[in-house]
Image (cartoon, rainbow, N blue to C red):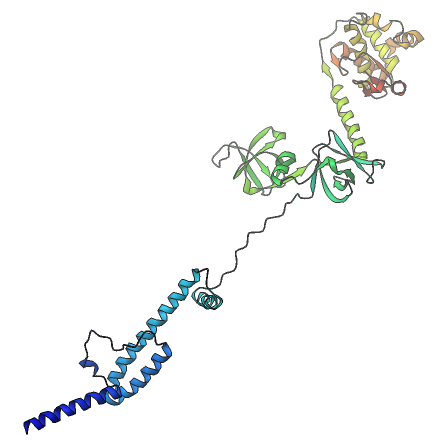
Amino acid sequence: MKNKITLFSIVVFLSVFWISIFVGFDAPSDMQDNNQPIETISDNIDNADKQALYTERLNALSVRYGNVVSNSERLYLSNKVDDSEDVDQTVQIDDETDDSTDDESLSSKEQVTSEAEPETEPETEPETEPSKYSDIGISVAETYLNIRAKATTESDIKGKLYRDSAARILDSVGDWYYIESGSVKGYVKAEYLKTGIPDDELIEKYGRIKVSVNTDGLNVREEPDIESRKLTVIYRNEVYPVIELNDEWIKIDITDDKIIGYVNKEYVELIVSFKKAISKEEEEELKRLQEEERIRKETEIKYREEVDYTEEELKLLACLVYAEAGNQSYEGKLAVANVVLNRVMSKKYPNTIKDVIYQPGQFTVAKSGSLAKQLEKYESYSTESQLLTIKAAKAALSGANNIGNRLYFHAYKSAVSKGYDKKKNAVKIEDHIFW
């Protein structure tokens, strides 16, 4: 009987064993080795197959073991899927550095790249600030460059652009530039106008830098330091030439006060200017003013040693001056008196007043009788012009001189006709030219 029972138990055991294999039965999770994973699905099965197998087995297990087994399996399979996705993503990111990927791989990589990091705008180089002086040309002519009315050397000259002066180029016509400089517009030969000069070089070499004060009162310091001694104060809109530019301070020249000092750059505005062209009319006026200034300086009364003289010599000199320049101003009278004295001091002429005045062929009034007539009237001199003549003669004998060492004079119109006005040292004083 016992043998039958034993045989029956073996048959039952084997039957259950084969049935369990047939229906895919697994032992409960708490009966399995804790060191073994719940799932042993081959890595060659893709995620879709895994999910389907998971669902099928979960349904079967739920019937027998309920929610406990279900939750355990969910956690395991979920971790497996997540781990698989991380590896795929890592592989795809690593593949971004592979230069030999095909189109499909490249598409996948682009997708991962776009998800992994935002797109950035391509870097662009900062725009170069255009030159402020790109249309400026500098005259490189030896002395000056003629500005003409038309683009031909036969055209009228409207002005001159002196060497190192600047012009704004408005247009070009063949080998000519149409320019503007100062008050002049016209054409110049392009070969004598240097262009394309960098701003820094243009300002440093050809520019004249000044500052304009933009505050109510600005201290001028002895050194570029706020603690330095204050030299003076300058005021709004005043303009001064710059000697030197520093980071925070500017060295300026206050010419009128004979002061050179430093001002804070924050309170001034830099002004850059260039030498400009001069029109034909402006040049004529400039020459006239320069000539007047030259004459003024050269005819300023300067003093030399007094001349010893007698009353007869004063009388003779005064009468000669009145005969030659009775209708001239005090300056004109003084100049004539000094021509006589300059001859006395020159080795070319006699060394006395009398001998100089009466030297043949020199003073026409001495020969014509005009001088003799004035000598007769001298004691009765009383008019303003006569008294001014005596004053001028005395001043000349006392050392007052307004013509330097000039030895000659002539009536202006006659002097011009003879070309005396072209003499290098010629100066005009009223109606006479002295040289």
